[in-house]
Amino acid sequence: MDNPNWKGNPDRDRISLDEDYEVRYWSHKWGISPEQLTEAEQKAGSNIVRKVHDALCELGYMKPQIGN
Image (tube, rainbow, N blue to C red; front, side, top):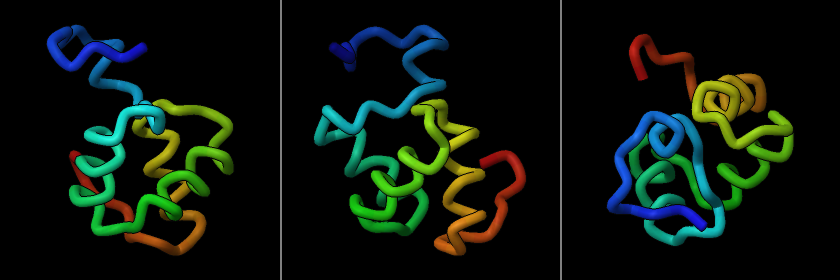
């Protein structure tokens, strides 16, 4: 389970769809719906932030961002 108090890199580099606050954070940050976030994670086959971001771009839900 994800720990919001732990700030190590592995926690920052991954998205946990099991944690409501993470789904809210990433959906708001990227201007997408929670459903789009879930779809992108499934397409990426990973919960690594960069891979999910790239999948969102491939799906057409957002444009690539520099330094996202």
